[in-house]
View 1 (cartoon, rainbow, N blue to C red):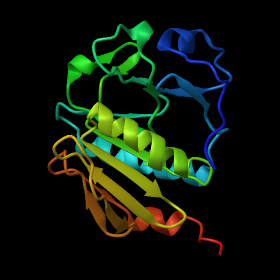
View 2 (tube, rainbow, N blue to C red; view 1 turned 90 degrees about the horizontal axis):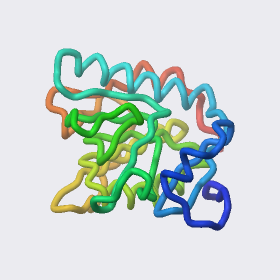
View 3 (cartoon, rainbow, N blue to C red; view 1 turned 120 degrees about the horizontal axis):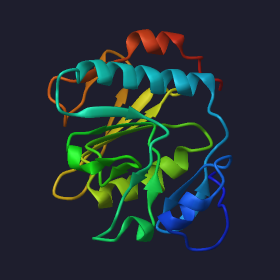
Length: 197
C-alpha cells in the first residue's frame, strides 16, 4: 500500500510552500503524497540512532548529517526553486557539498539518504523514492527495515543503482560514500520489537 495522494493536480515547490503546515507532503514529479502521521516510537528510535552515529563519525569533517524534516529539492535541470516539482524529506541525509545547503534546506542530491521503512511507507520508499534518488544522483541510498531487521543498500554506479546489497541489522554497516563512517546495529536491534508473524 502506498501513501495517499493529496489531490490529482500537478504541483511545484511554489505550491508546496503555500500549504498549511499541519499536513506534511512530499512532491514527486509534481504529485503530492501525504506523509504518514507521526511515526512509531521504534521508527524514531532507529532514525535517531542512525543520525546520532553518523553525526558523531562526521565530527570535524566537511560533510554534514541532518534528520527529518528537512526539505530536499531535487531539480531535474536548472529550474528555479519555484519550478521544482520534486521535494522530499528523507529520514536521515548527509551532504558533503556546502553549496547545496541554504536556509530552506538542500537543493540537489545528498551524498547519502537513509529511509526507515514502515508498512505504510515501504512501497513508496522502494519504488518511487528509489527512482527519484537514482535519477537525482544520490550516491548511496539505505532502506532500513526495523521489523524485519534488514537493510537494503543501493550504491550509484554509472548513474544507476543496479542490484542492491541486502544485509541483516547486526554488526555494523560501512557507509560506502563516507570513508571511516559506519553504523553499529547490535544495541539498537536489541531494543526493537520482535516481528509478529
